[in-house]
Image (cartoon, rainbow, N blue to C red; front, top):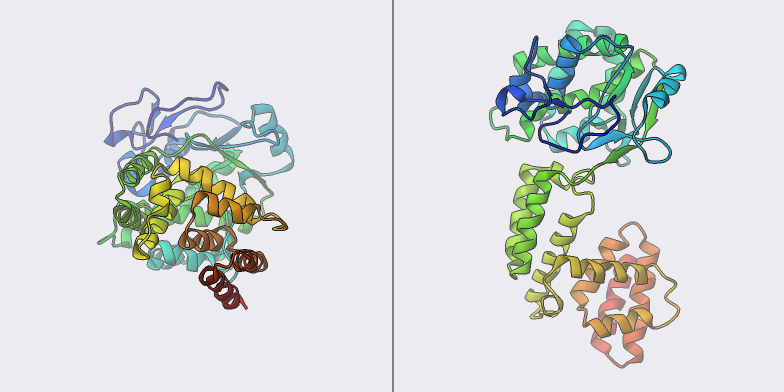
Amino acid sequence: MAHKEFDVPEDKIYIPLQVGAALHESLGYLSDDTGDNISAKNPNYSELSGLYWMWKNGPDCDITGLCHYRRYFLNEKDELLKATELEEILKKYDVIVTGRLIYPEGESIYDGYAKKHYAGDLDLTRKAIKKYYPEYLPTYDTVMNGSCMYYANMMVTSQKLMNRYAQWLFTILFEVEKHIDMTGYDDYDRRVFGFLAERLVMVWIRHNRLRAYETPVGLMGVKSETKDVIAKSAKLLQDGQYKEVTAYLKEINTKRPDLFFKDSDTEGDLAAIYTFAEIMTAEERAGKRNLVSYSTDYKELTKLYVHLKELFTESLTDSTLYHFILEKNLSTEFISLSIQKILEDDREQRIRVYNYLANAYLNDGILHQARIYVELALREE
């Protein structure tokens, strides 16, 4: 499924299909606007406009599947799955899907959807299932109250099963479409049917007791929209407009949270830029300009941050970390915020680092700095 030009895999089983083709200029690929299609609904259905086209117009074959121009199923060598590998897997399994996306403890699939989108969408989905497929309700409720799902609407299976799935899925989604009110939805939330379908993949597989082969998904490059946001925020940071950086990225995160996901911001550039802007702002409030004086190039700052991360996670038996902080003139604001982010899930190590720094400053007679780290350590108790 593609909405832009990309480097097409050489393996001939991967066939580019332009989705939303009815709304855009041709990319020269097969397009989802021929025959029986919902191409014009692509802004609401995302890659599903391609799935619909495959169902109604796709070539007759034994095995069929859907991946993205940036996301592919991988084998154990981190290579794209080949025809022979797909065939071997499907001798033992009914369907190939992504690895499970697991929500934090205490958060259900329903809760997670409600956080990012509109909970009413799922309520309408349940009503549609109750109307057309009431036998699926117990499974639907179990999955929605559970904490794991498949994602990206990626799947490989027999064409027979894929067609059955498409019939089931679009019957539900078209019913939801009749009743949904998207007033106030931004462009991201208008992709609602793609989001709903992701939550339904596991429902269909579990209810039909299909043998699912879960496999890693490989990412080929950064999402183009993410590249644009990285470039703009990096330029703002480079120009010393770090307050504008945090405001800009907060606005983007509200409108397009998907751009910050790991499969979009593959190298964590946006997270890094935001962190450095946050530190610079905190330093300014304290009357300092330590980080700005060091660099406003986020790539240079990332090297500094990575080195600091390595030192935080070491045994802290010598003065290496302390001397590094003094050499680079790193502020308390930088160090304390970095400790919180780098050691977010390791409370004991946070305390060890605070105590290490408190003792190091105390030995040098810098009492006010020692006191700061003692207080931070005590807050962890």
